[in-house]
Every structure is written in C-alpha cells, then in structure tokens.
Image (tube, rainbow, N blue to C red; front, side, top):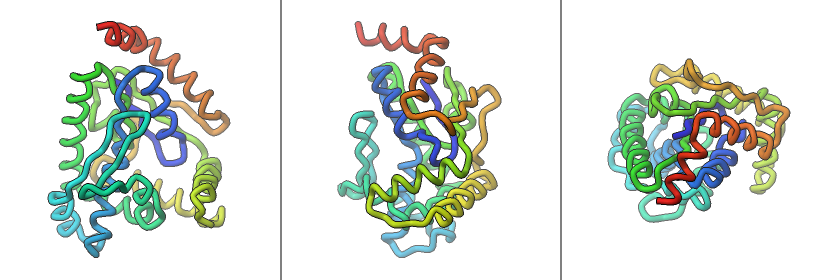
Length: 234
C-alpha cells in the first residue's frame, strides 16, 4: 500500500491515480469522502460549523466512492457528484466539516474497510489524503508527503478553476490555499502533518510526469512493483 499525504495543490489526486494505474492497484481519494459529506451538509441547509448537525448528517448520508483509478466515481444518494464536490461552495466548507472528530471517526473506519477490501481483491492500493500515513494506515509500506510552495499551489488551483469555467483572482486563490492550510494543520482531530517515516517530495518545480517517475522509483525500492507484478500473474 502507498499512502500519499499533503496539502491541496501538490498534485496528489492526479499523480495518485497515475501511480495506481502503473502499479495495477486500486485507488482511494479520502478527501472526496469528506467533500461528499460536506455536500450533504450543504444540501441539508445545515451550518458546517455545527458539529452535532454535521455528525448527524454524516451518519445518515448514503454515498459511494469508486476505487478504480481510471474513473473514481463519487455518488451521493445515487447521484453522480464527482464534479459538484470540487466546486467553490464545497471547497470553502470542507475544512470545518472535516475537522469534526465524529465525522473523521466515521470516515476513517469506512476508509479502512475499503482499503482492506481492495487489498484482498487486487493486492494493492494507493490512498491519498491528509492523514493516511499518520492515522488511516500508519503501517503503509510507502508513505510520501507531497509539498509545494503556496504560490505554486495557488497557481495550479487557479488553472483548475479556469479550466472548469470559474473565474477567481490569484490573490483570492492564494488566500484560500493559505486558509485551508491553517485549518487543516491546526485542527485537533488528525491534523495535516507528515508521518515520521514519510518521504518528503517537493513538487514545486516538478510536473506530474516527473513526480510519477519519483514515486515509481520509491515504490520499486520498497518492493511494491514486484509485488504488483506477482499479483497480476496469479
């Protein structure tokens, strides 16, 4: 198993999916789980800062998360919400929702079940998030903490917004990146931080292909490439 942690804008999602495909492994975006719960909270008209209301909604929300790196579907109450959970409303509200300890407890338990199921089925999985190496799967054979400067991450986020037709100034995007970093690093429950044995990889001056090459090399050093090849021949 590979655990990829780090703040937004480091290329986690894209490179995690590509790495999973390279390893013939499953893929899990834990951030999407917090986003889909956040969407459920917003649809219910609840205050994302109301921990009791958020917890109740999280317990009742019916959602699914795909584990195929080629098309990791996300559905809420049977509706495809993969695009909607990436919108500005959810992005603004996801930090307070994900800071609720009861919500994290619920989702971490579900994440571990998904990981176990995928490992039993295909033999490997790449999991991305902010607390994978420290909380969700501290026994992962490879833990990587991706980083990049706030300026670079804001530029990448701005490019994504533009591609999606959202017009946001660089100053606003940078402020949002810094705000998210403060909230994620400062929360009491599972704060964003690198595991002590994680490999740090700064992606500020690397493109996705270069990051992928570095990760594949790390996976090879841990014997994960041979493991996947062996699994594929069974």
